[in-house]
Amino acid sequence: MTRSLEYSSIKPTIPIILASGSESRKLMLEEAGIEFNVIVSGTDEDLLKDQISNLPFEQQVVHLAKAKAQSVSMENTDKVVIGGDQMCVLEDTVFNKPGSKEKAIENLKLLSGKTHSQNSGVCIYHNNECLWEYSETVELRMHSLSEQEIENYVEIENPIHAAGAYKFESLGCNLFSSVNGSSFTVRGMPLLPLLNALRELQIISLK
Image 1 (cartoon, rainbow, N blue to C red):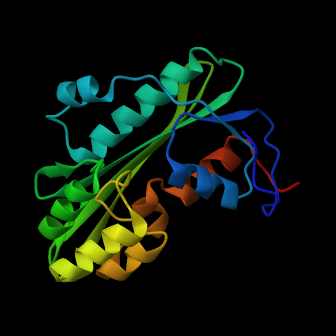
Image 2 (cartoon, rainbow, N blue to C red):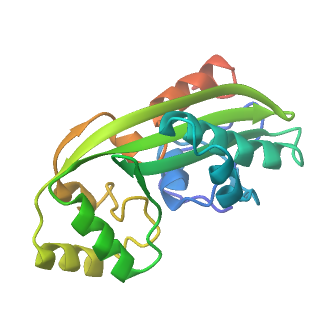
């Protein structure tokens, strides 16, 4: 992976792998200056979701994050592996990545004027062992949006790969009247707890 030159870097004591193809998670780690590579896990997420669907959402995201990290750690035992997962939930309905503009518009119409949650899980693996796991939930209240506003937003940002059908790190933040929790978690990863854990585990430092 080639990192953007505008970010200063922190070289970890053990090489780090992000077991996720999420552009948002990659960007957050880059902005934090962490040197890392990306290996996308081949975990069958749909199968695992069926198996753990009876668990609370905040536990489901940790299970999914750990499954991704473990599958990569098994093949990279000398590396630190970070796994992450996110679920956007309205009442008991999970809003997966829409995959199309039409589905994104449909999802935003359902979320408009309501309070929903973003549940994010993250973990750290090394040598096929989980060293740390964590989950966090943020509640968001969306403005009552007109159909034209929704269509305009989707056309501008094309949020078809974003949980909830919005990119909070950019124009998507304008969709909300209130957010109770960390914006990092909304973007897909509780960044500060993760950085704290990496520091406590002596994987990163500013020395």
